[in-house]
Image (tube, rainbow, N blue to C red):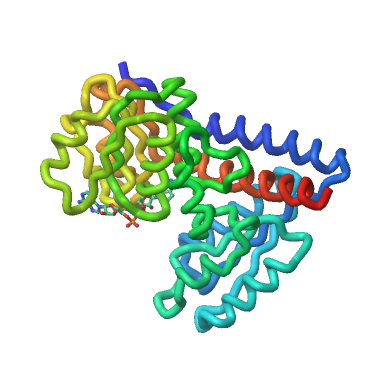
Length: 295
Ligand code: NAD
């Protein structure tokens, strides 16, 4: 029997914890955590994501602010917006929604965010702290949200991850690479596979923990999954359904995984909801850290 890992429920528990801790922070004389989300242009999926992020922040007792910049905005203007948010005392977390239009220098923009407000965890300083952590990850480190959510789901499902063989398919800076660093810090033996890997199915079959973060609908077939493996499906792919309407599928052939995987996250309702909950948790961590610094 394959167990379905309920990411929606886990995200609800994390959000409830954040709500309680925001109340505690404010009751102790701390600030209302503020999250600013910057969106350049009107990419339809991004519009939906940023709306969810600011609404969820407000539902958690935080101040959510959406800054929409026109599609014609250049790098310097985005940098000026980031600089103003860095100085803004009411803002504890800054997120620049990716992907940015091609003409914008995304690396410069991400590098300009105050690392203490970098709730996406993409600033090179925070990336460096993650990759150079030996043993325990510092609790105040702002971790990329999707990998952080994956680790919570894995630790809830399996307990101690030490010694397990984890295969991460995908090597992006947003998911694959930071997740591999977190798994390594949790004492897993980690294989990172990608588009140039040979014998991908064989690599996947050797995994006790298999994470697919590729963006290719149902790339991972049922017989790529080792018996009893724990599978996290990060992929979100919109495809045409049989009824002509579009539907979301992951990077794993979910029906084929039944009876083969020990446990698996569904799409939707698996890793996705954890990402937003972790963003709220990061905003709280950033607000609490600044309150402590300011005494
Ligand atoms: P990306 O395009 O930046 O990276 C994809 C990675 O997959 C690359 O490293 C590439 O080497 C690898 N890859 C591509 N084709 C491959 C193949 N045929 N075989 C093996 N590896 C291959 O994507 P990303 O930003 O890491 O996102 C991956 C997926 O996760 C997408 O579907 C995205 O929508 C989804 N995603 C979901 C969440 C969430 O909250 N659930 C968050 C971020 C991304």
